[in-house]
Each structure stands twice: as structure tokens, then as C-alpha cells.
Length: 456
Length: 106
Image (cartoon, rainbow over all chains, first blue to last red; front, top):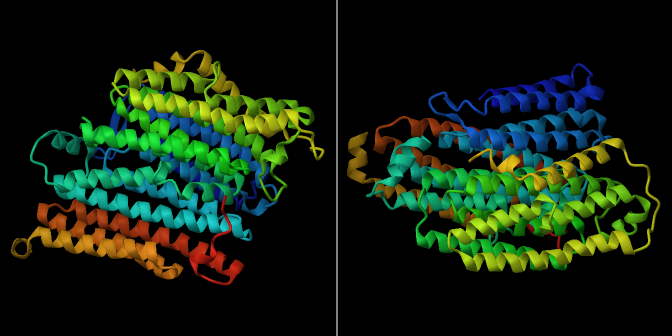
């Protein structure tokens, strides 16, 4: 609870800082504030509690995921300072929108009442609509913002209808009451329909196939900073929320639901990977890679009892690798009008450190050992086999092999092709964020128990 | 109030809301004018609000009506952002036809 209040306070402070002309100090102050909030959040880890008539429920799950979100936001805020250098008057708006987005995501993993869930998802989505369309003179950014807005509010409408039917069937918005009632028999037929609508809306937000069609366009058109936010923070938040919702609304998955999850998982992985193979634009390629990762994450829901740990580990590994790769991509494509792979030609010679970081993060996403991506996939596959779903694991292994193909296309461009242009000096913050993110990724890859012991 | 609900039946409220919701969905999917798409989204959300109030009376519980306030406020915030995006789209391409938005392909 204190986390949520502190984050909202920091967001308001960042808006006010504009008036007092604190623009130069804003990024470090916001980052330090977020670090302090991270400490505050972690201090709540051992003391589960609920606040305001069960509106907010703080437990180990919510604290662990909130901490992950705060870490990701610190990285994103740190990168913003240089990225928005050309718009010095708007920096406080961008930073405060990012912090409000974080407030929405914390509400989404610690809700105890469906109204809190709805407010959280809307705060997150509305912030992202603004960020996606934030380059208002750029026609591509406009188009991305418009498409994201239409798809996002369509999905919100579906989620709202689902919430309404669940309320109609149970008479409660409170998750604990709904959880108890959903165990019993004699629920009206609206209840499963409502749950299905909520899940469909969430699948829109995670961009899992067959609800993925908006993702590539939106990721490509948005400013790179927003793409980084969407593909790391927003995806992780939506996935954690989907798990929390399913855990309460459908504690035992019926075989029919399991088959649906298997189909969605295999479809997302395959569609994402096959389409990613033929992309030339790096952001578009990472969008499809994100769709395939969404398939992997949905797979974790098949073993619902161990899913929390697996998901925390997988999302941490994926998001940290995503931040590291986007820090490099943002720097390389900053002054370009496109994000084609050819921009990365010869990076291995002109800037070995950034090339090494990008390679490492792509290898982590592909699932090569010592990076945490490997252990994430390993744990996920082991748990899914234990739950008795061999087919989906076989499909996932084949997909992992396909994914190496397009990740290596980028890596080969960096190391084997000749550089076309001289690169300017790298601002310190890009290197620092990329190195820190990839180091965190490797650390949890070498000592997986750091993360896996948190929720067990 | 409860008496009227008993006479009409909660099912009819659900049918009406589903019908309105579907009108909204098809509006979003088939219309090309951005303003009409926005209006269709509003119809979707308001169909749900109607059902919330009906269920609230059905359960004799005020929570559902309070939720309607939340969802109205959120819908207003959402459409404000949407209209702002629409204005910047109109300034750049001089049209509000969403069929013109197809620069991103691959």
C-alpha cells in the first residue's frame, strides 16, 4: 500500500518540479526516489496485509513483482534523460507519465478487488497511449498511438464486460469472496463467460496470438523509448495480472481450458517466430519475438501451482534482457529515421562493448546457458512436463531453435559486416543501464535460487 | 424498484446489454470514421454500465452502482486521450478516416 502511495506522490512531485525549474535534476531525483521506494517495498516483503476493505492486498507475490517493476522503471527513467534531450520542456511530463504507469502496474499486481484491477489496467493503458503517440509531428507515431488506443480501449471494454458478468454471477467485486464462491457448484452460466472475457482482454494486452495483430505496428511506430516500455514493463505486468486473475477466478483448470491454453501458447510461439524470421526492422522483429515470448509465458499457466515462481523468473529474465537490448537499440537508432538491421552493421568493430551487450541479451532471449533466459526456459519446460503436457514442450523446444535464427541475423550483422558510418561517443547512461541490466540477468542466471526461493 | 426487476426479468437486461455491446463491437470493427469508432467504444462501455446498474439492483447491493462511477470517469479520461491523438492525426494527414493509417507494414 505504502508503495502505491509513494509512487503516486513521486509522480505528482515530478509534475510540480517543472514549476520550480528543477528539470536538470529531475532524472536523478526520480531515479533516487524510485530506489527509495524499492527499499520501502522490499521492507514489506515479510508482512502480508490488506488495506481499505481488501482493496489492496500486499503479499509476497505482489511485493516480488512490484520490485521487479520498480527496477525496470528505474532503468527506463534513467534512459529518458538523454532520449528526450531535444524536448527539455517536456521532460517532466514524460517522467511523471512513466511513474504513473508504474503506479498502475503496482495496482495491477496487488489488487484485492476487481475495481482496483480495472483502475490499474486503465492507468497503465492510458499512460501508454500517450507515450505511444508522444512524437506528435511524426506520422508513424500518430498511427501507432491511434492503433494502440483503438485496440486498447476495445480490450478494456471487453474486460469491463467480463467484470460485470462476474459481478452479476457472484454479487461481489472482492477477489477473496469470488474465490470462495467459484469453488462451489451452481454458478450461473454468466460466470465462466465473464472469466473468459476478462482473459481475452488480458491476452490482448499481453499480445498473445490470436490477439497479437496490433503489436508489430504499434511497436514499430512508437518512439523507441515507448517500445522499450511496452515490450518489457507492460508485457510483464499484464502477464503477472493474468496469472493472479486465473489463480483466483479459476483455481482448478478444467481439461477444456487447458487445451485452450495449449493452443494459444503454441500458436503465439509459432506465429511470433515465423513472422520474426522475415523482418528487417529491429523493433518489429523484437515485437514478434515478444509475441513468441508471450506464448512461453502463457505456457507457465498450465502448471498453476508452481506458475508464480516460474513466471517471476521468466519475466525477470526476459525483461532485463529486453532493457539491455533496447538501451543499445535506442542509442544506435537515435538519429536515424528507420530501425533497419543495416544500422547495426560493423558495431562489433566500432563499439565492441555495446555489441557484446546486445549479443548477450539476444542470447539470453534465445535461451543460451549462463544467461538467465536458459534457466527460465529450463524451469518452465520441466514444470510443464511435470504437469503432463509434453506436446507443448516439444513445440516450445522447436520454437526456441527457430528463434536462434533471427537473433543471429542481428548478431552476424554486427560482427561480420563492414561499418557504414562512424558512431559518435556513447553517453555514459546508455552503457551504465545496459551493463547493469545484463549483469543482473547473468547474476540471476548463475544463481537462480536468488529469485526462485522468493515465492516458495 | 425490485418489483419492476422481477416483472421484467434480469435476463432481458442482459440481452439488451449484450445487444448494445455487440452494436459497439461491430461499430469498432466496420466503421472507418474515427469519431464513429470512438462513439462505438462509448456504446460498448455504456452497455456495460447499464448492466452493472441492473445487477446492482438484482443483488440489492450498491457496489455495482459505485463501480459505474469509476468506469465513467475512466471512460472520460480515455476518450480525452483518444481525441487528443485524433487531433494530431488530423493535423498531419488532414483526415480522420482510419483507413488512411497504413504506413506501418512489414
